[in-house]
Length: 228
Image (cartoon, rainbow, N blue to C red; front, side, top):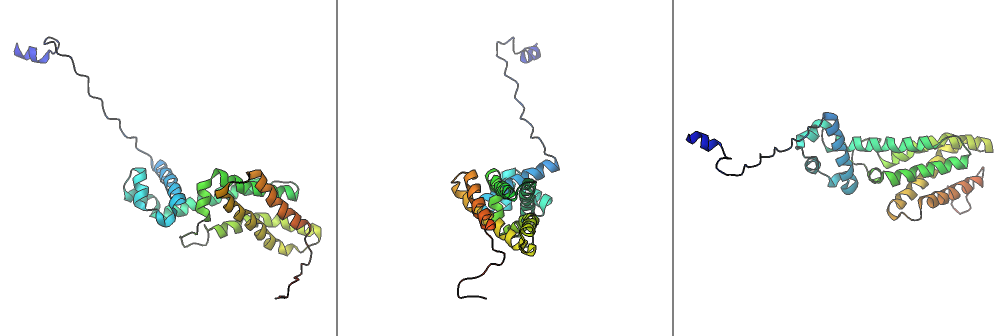
């Protein structure tokens, strides 16, 4: 029968064609997975281009989603940026707090310097974001507020050291801000040059800070003509 001949390709000597391959299905992300993906992409773009240079369109395109998905998770670019900054702040504060374990005050200073330099080395994108001026109107999430938070951790240690040496412990916050600011700004410089090596940078920072504290005057005086 003609029908039999048409359906039996082997009888006509024709080679059977391979079955068409099915296109692999795209694995659908959960809401949590999509949120983490957007945070990772936003973190990279904010570090590279800054807040103003990054657009919702580019974030969405990198993630392979539409703009409304970004708005659904974060309410916009500002919301995404705020979450990225908050995570980096907590990451750095946890590193510094964890480093300040019991030990000699000089060793504590070394640990704090290493904690910041470790963060810069390991979380470079995060540090680049933190040292930029925050465009989001908030009292936290700026580099200055981060320095203040870390200084608070150091303040108690300095207060005990001041009291033991007969200095006014009420001045500990001032010295804590000065010390942490010195380390942070040096770290910001080291971020780009990466020379000398991290341990050497830490040693020089501690050298300046510790020997300055060691020879601290209980009542510092001004020697210039200006007195107020």
